[in-house]
Amino acid sequence: MEKSYPTEHLTLRDFTLEDCPRVEEIINDFEVAKTTLSIPYPYPKGGAESFLNFCKESQAKGLSLNFSIVLKETNEVIGSIGSLISPEHKKAELGYWLGKAYWGKGYGTEAVKKMIEIGFKENDWNRISARAYTNNPASLRVMEKAGMKHEGTHRKELIKWGETLDTAYYAILREEYEELEKTK
Image (cartoon, rainbow, N blue to C red; front, side, top):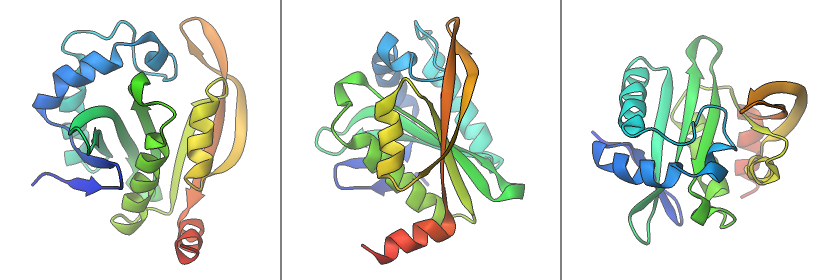
């Protein structure tokens, strides 16, 4: 059964083969790829299907949750959000991206908030973390708006296309999420 989670403007739902051409269309953008560690540019033909197969295998083992981010208004895939799960430690690390045409509209924050809700309400997670390059302030704001707290910055931690970058780490704990829910 396909999982589907609506928000005000979006639906987070399982990836399908039908999503692959659209994903390849919007992810094959230098500006999108440069904000992530693992998205190559140019994005290879067939890369979305390979990613979909990886997601299905990983989810079947309980090691990840991965969803397409779909704009309700047009039923169009606009990005992806997922989590790598560490069941033995009851934690997950989020990752997300949006097509450039959808930046700055609040969709990233909306998707991250929903993923955090799924993590704490439907799973036995105690901690949800995420990271972003410090040269990507929009992603840092998404994490902050979603209730995550900055835990530190790893200087010159990762190399993307030959450039050594600093990475900011954010997280939210179950008890922090529950406190935020009380104030809604």
